[in-house]
Length: 145
Image (tube, rainbow, N blue to C red; front, side, top):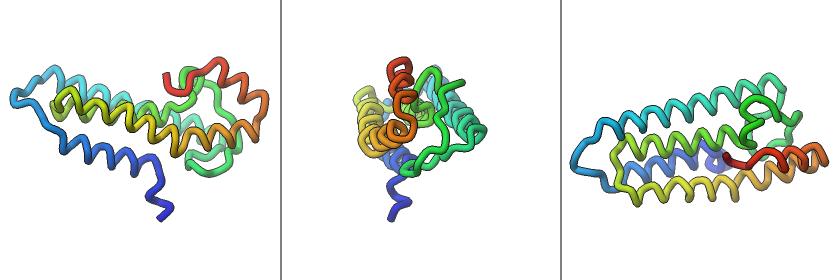
């Protein structure tokens, strides 16, 4: 059952919720295009962050101890570019699906779940592993954006 508690599974669950939300009767191509752009940006964030983490030879799997602290590239702008990318993907699909505005509440709800289920524990492991260096990183780099 450990595979269930992974960020992509949570993202998929929120996407399923989003797919069931009411949609507008009229199609707005600009909104759909914005959705596609957000999805592509989110996937780019994820891919670039994974490449950066691989270059530093550290894990991308939550609940594992880090081997290195990545603070450059995308990680100089946000401490969680993969999770931010996930949030962009979710937002993008909601726009693409022409979901009604209240459906956007799924985005902060997803971010809250990810923070509680993954980020807080990851930050505790990074603090334990890297101490003052991680503290200084947190002071200069936001958790999300």
